[in-house]
Image 1 (spheres, rainbow, N blue to C red):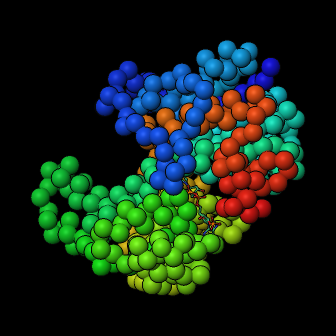
Image 2 (image 1 turned 45 degrees about the vertical axis):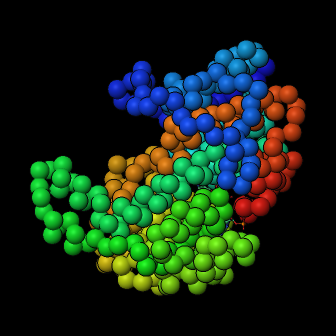
Length: 384
Ligand code: NDP
């Protein structure tokens, strides 16, 4: 019987919720490209409940224990004495969410002699050393598309929040003020601006589609060009690289995976090539930008705002400079963990486990590494 080790974020500080703001979720069955939502044989949770925290257990306990497997759920993931490291030694399956990543480094994979499967409950498996997974024959799978639209909605919210100076204005209202000039001295319309995405995959394209009605000029760069019908429909300008796109944009949103080609992409050089007063939104991964270069660009006014929800490491330390830099709209890593997204990636994790334990193939679109090489979605979007 297998040990399944699941690393999840902590419950709310006031305890696991007994009631929710809304009753249920809209019923959706397909993603925009026609891919079906996860199709496990059954689920043992209520969609719309908190599943991504320790007590939510991704709704997996009944199913796994019913098969005789052991499920260990913990949020304790850092250092050699953590519960994660202690159980990793004999775990066959590790499940982790990018929001609270259990970093599966090469050293940890080398120590995990029984490890066969690493599941990302969500999207983005950069917390797993993919080269080490390839070398040790560990399958890596993620729940592709499960939270892409959740993130795209968040990106649109953050672009508008920065350009309209929403967060500081909200603070004036909370603090009893009516300081209109203080609020509007940094407030602009998005209409007419040039907005570009680095990557036009599931999230990037959904952002472009959602922004088109704002009458902006849309740009993108990607390793593969979108079909010309989509370029025409949305009026897209394609750029061969982020370096060629950035100088033409007032707003840039980053929607590429973190891999060797994208790590450190937004450094001092690229940031200084942007228009003065540009906005940068990063919900992809913290390491795609140079942490201190972003702080410098905000302090000098080269960037008018930076927002996102991804940091490195996660959780970010209390003294991380992004917590206190000017004109930022950072949150903890939340955009892909709405209650709506949790229902999808919990069901998708269950689907992956059902396939794994039945010896059936895991959907190609969920695979990142399999059979000692990049596979499925991973072969398309990642590099080693
Ligand atoms: P997709 O795989 O659908 O899209 C990724 C896109 O990035 C692909 O079109 C790929 O291009 C492109 N790409 C890869 N490398 C480069 C590069 N060097 N330059 C330009 N484009 C590149 O993934 P999603 O859109 O669903 O997710 C994207 C990323 O967003 C995830 O990998 C994850 O890191 C992050 N994410 C964040 C979440 C959050 O909660 N904040 C939640 C979910 C995802 P091509 O296919 O042409 O090779």
